[in-house]
Image 1 (cartoon, rainbow, N blue to C red):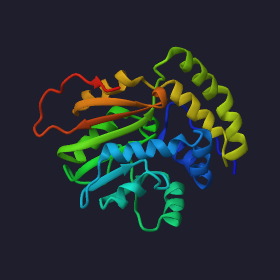
Image 2 (spheres, rainbow, N blue to C red):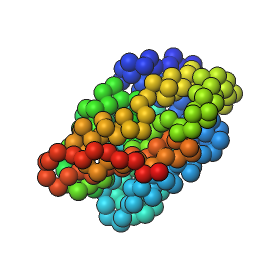
Image 3 (cartoon, helix red, strand yellow):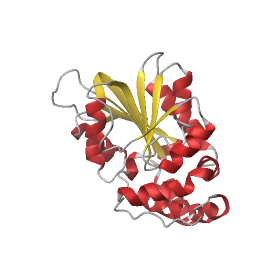
Image 4 (tube, rainbow, N blue to C red):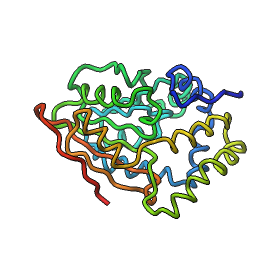
Length: 245
């Protein structure tokens, strides 16, 4: 099935259809395109979330549930939420033990201050309104609760950044044509990563949404960054974000 890629305007219907089209081979395609680094990144997300038994955790843009599985294995009560029905269908087939819920990140189907932690991996970049999404995640998180964002970012070594961007724009789409059910979607991936803010800029956006203690850690030389934050116990001005390398 051929699916037209979404535009960088990130209209929700376009993005949902695009991910529906790649759902069947999504996990193996990610393995190949990342040279299996995505497994290391998922382990880092789990460590950053630090799930505890009985905690209520929302894994947003969870896709087929690969990022939700280790959180649930730690004993947390995990909801794998995505707005792609194709992703949810594949996830329920492959991981029937998980709880999958259809939901829009800009209108989450959860009550205020309900969750102990929210995490989103490689999904924040696809939101039509990132700032509204960050505020919505804040709304559903309890005071003192945690946010972990795993997203593509900017390599910190300039020569490597040049090589990386060349890979994104040339090699990635070519490899995707061999392994993906919808290679055009990975042209969108490359373009959206190139247009994405760097680590500091994203930290500032998270802070502006009301989260506090914003910090980040680079993975794979900055190809990916993990941003951590906390919902304050009371509404107050946030501190300036800082890096942790």
